[in-house]
Length: 343
Image 1 (cartoon, rainbow, N blue to C red):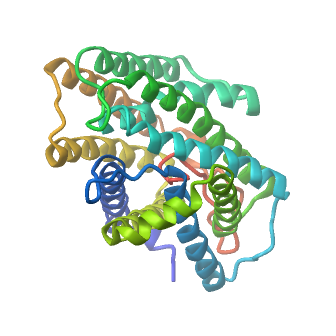
Image 2 (cartoon, rainbow, N blue to C red):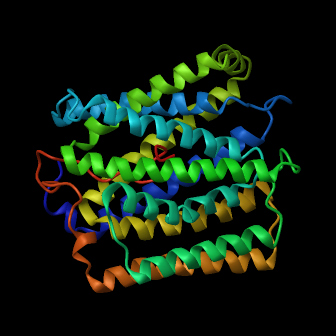
């Protein structure tokens, strides 16, 4: 049972932080492995099938937790609004997986930082938001660091060294769609005060349906099932991928609810550094000194943003995005890109 003491206990903050970093690092390892390492000489090429598996696991988790918490199973917002988030979420995730065929994991991870600009632009268009000069300067610095990384060393995937441009186009699709997903999902939380497990249930359920229809329409459903049956190791990796995705969602929701968005932002900055370092160590991806400089520039800007906001005590960051988030009846939290919705 969650009590008021937990929200002030730094041990829980560390627990959630370690959970987020650990589960998302595992998610990144399995994601890169599934898409770039052959199974008995055959590469897995049906990225939407991974999205389907992740969403079904999230649906099961959301149903169980909604029952445990006594949350309503009825839709708390119009179905068409859930569907918009689901559509953008599915195809953003597909672009993210597909990009790993053409660009390195580090480039894909940096895309998550590069999306600051698209998110800000979508926020202006959809929600009429405004941003400070500091926000724009941080976004520009991150963009500059990403650009330096991309232009000063190898960026291609081990799978295909000739189609990096295709990978960049897929990352562009991911940035645009994921920016729309997070912005519209935040709007959904605010306008309809959906609880976290209710929104997880409907978005993931509709995302699973979109993924299934996409697989049928492209003729990839049966080949994906056949590949799964022929390669038991793939099934194990897929199960671990889905499990780590669900675990990260729970830790993310809990940390944001109990300790705020700023603590979560700092956690995600650490996660990006750790994920890229682990990828370089495990898969022996090449990196140049100038690329390392670009990484340092990016993460310095991100940490500066988090620390500056904490020192300011920004009310807009500290107060919950959902009315009544602290109350036992309403447990909704803002969605983020780290949830392989996020994820």
